[in-house]
Image (cartoon, rainbow, N blue to C red; front, side, top):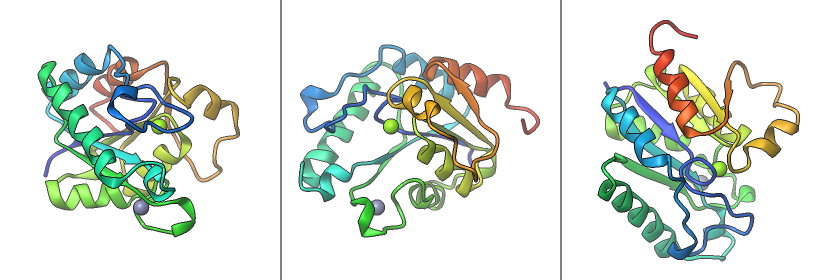
Length: 187
Ligand SMILES: [Mg+2]
Ligand SMILES: [Zn+2]
């Protein structure tokens, strides 16, 4: 089994949009994304994107467009020297009660089955409490909150009671610094 780093998409790899990322032209990849992913990859982790895209369930964008955006993002990341092993998307609205929408761990558990990953040696990086809760529920060894995207706003709201230890950092680059510095014993 492989260790992995699970990453949220909007607000972590690309800029978050309040009104959803609805087309490729709205995808603004953070400049530090490529090198940060490369550092994760070089350290021996699989890289898995887990993204809630309720815009699909709300009828704002089609599932095809949402998948196309993820495919193009992965391709662009590859063209810039890094890699994403797979992207998982929850297309449902919150009221649909699915098992994949974060804070539920469905996407992480599915990835673990399909890609032979070991959550207990894996990390979750997100810009929302729901990202961290999903990682915690899946049994991740480390949770990192970034201040980019929704992160700053989220950390001004009370932390969910059920959320245990996590690290708070400025951005993905700092998240990777934290991860690589804490690979040994459980932090
Ligand atoms: Mg996000
Ligand atoms: Zn779902």
